[in-house]
Length: 214
Ligand SMILES: C[C@@]1(CC(=O)O)c2cc3[nH]c(cc4nc(cc5[nH]c(cc(n2)[C@H]1CCC(=O)O)[C@@](C)(CC(=O)O)[C@@H]5CCC(=O)O)C(CC(=O)O)=C4CCC(=O)O)c(CCC(=O)O)c3CC(=O)O
Ligand SMILES: NC(=O)C1=CN([C@@H]2O[C@H](COP(=O)(O)OP(=O)(O)OC[C@H]3O[C@@H](n4cnc5c(N)ncnc54)[C@H](O)[C@@H]3O)[C@@H](O)[C@H]2O)C=CC1
Image 1 (cartoon, rainbow, N blue to C red):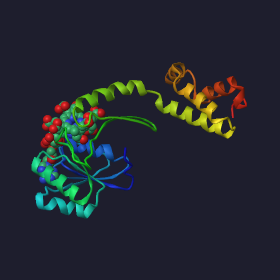
Image 2: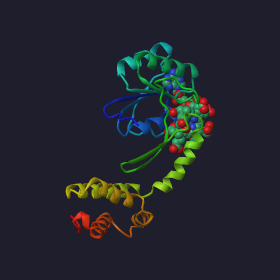
Image 3: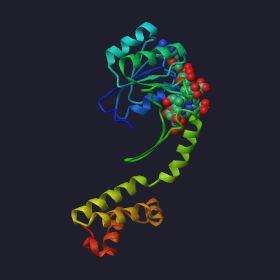
Image 4: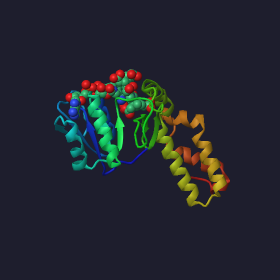
């Protein structure tokens, strides 16, 4: 996981794959997509530049835009190769969308990702089997439903326990019990309970916490 806030991600190729990678990074990075055409409709917040750089022009784009990551997603293997070479020569991270398997140092594989608020789970098969990453991502969506709310419960609980000077070993046990409680997961998912109620229950049940809600 890499924070691309205030960084530029430069994508070559305006097909469905270039678009997917552009959407992927646009929540934090400035994304620029360079392509002679834009086949896919959804490039998120990316800026689109209509151009078809040949091998000689690729390095100029990197020079001008100073990206933290370059994505090679054209349907022209030799251009993708040039993009990867130019990125490596400048020490810039590179994602080649037209290659699987063995990778050079500095290369980036884009994983399949589930997001539930601050909870992020990414799956990679080391570049071997993207269809499997996609399948596992779909399965994890079910497992992770409600993780957003659970993260908020655990964060509130540990902050409250810290503020009451509950000993760390006791605090760990209480937070751990909540995070792994199938009853609480089910109750949060169904809306049968809310964040405050879970915390009140834990504090009320345990005299070492000072009892009662904050
Ligand atoms: C190596 C990698 C490089 C990279 O792009 O970073 C790569 C490479 C290639 N993908 C290919 C094909 C497909 N890729 C997908 C889907 C996804 N591909 C993604 C990542 C990666 N793909 C990296 C490895 C990730 C890992 O480690 O597992 C995901 C996870 C993330 C994302 O892209 O956002 C996203 C699912 C997101 C989600 O659903 O959550 C599907 C399924 C579909 O589209 O329905 C197909 C068609 C089925 C098939 O072929 O398997 C081809 C052949 C192209 C051709 O034949 O021309 C190559 C190149 C090659 O194999 O040579
Ligand atoms: N990593 C992944 O998840 C996947 C990767 N692929 C690979 O990625 C490549 C791209 O896939 P798609 O988007 O479906 O292909 P596509 O053919 O729809 O789009 C390719 C885009 O690249 C543009 N392009 C061509 N020359 C260019 C240049 N010199 N500079 C900038 N842009 C240029 C084309 O005009 C087009 O917009 C495929 O060739 C395939 O090898 C395919 C499926 C999934």
